[in-house]
Length: 159
Image (cartoon, rainbow, N blue to C red; front, side):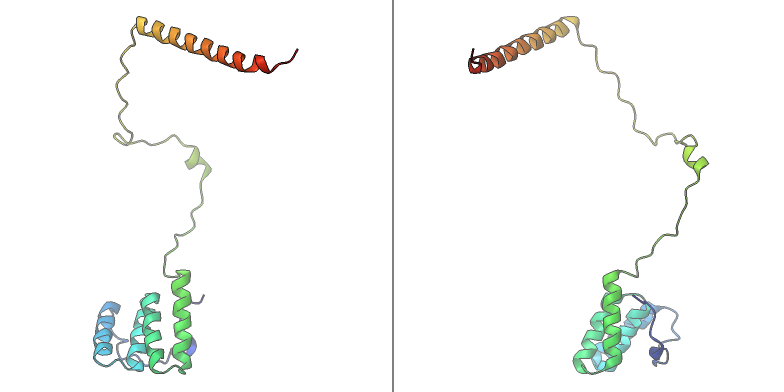
């Protein structure tokens, strides 16, 4: 999508073109369009939104302007352009391309103090008697599991 105004609109009269702050221009045009919602005023508001890259609001303003004069080709073209720009999100900035440097990537990490979480204290030592109980329990459970497996597999084997 092309995010610039068509050449036919470069001469579009904008009495607020000398305002440096686009938000001031938009606020003035919003109040004018609220008092007199003519197609020209709504289109002027749409143009201000367009120039400030608020394409969804510009499309809404041009749609309201088209409701007053559906055959206005310039407004229809701008409405379509605004809708396309809003849909494609051309107003979202894209960061500049950054290329990786081999030496920078392979350099040792520069870790500042406090950047990593604190290492927890070592777990308390498990008493030897508990280790033996755990080992015996696992051995008994493994033996029972093997017995059950054998018990279910052997009857199915025919001699």
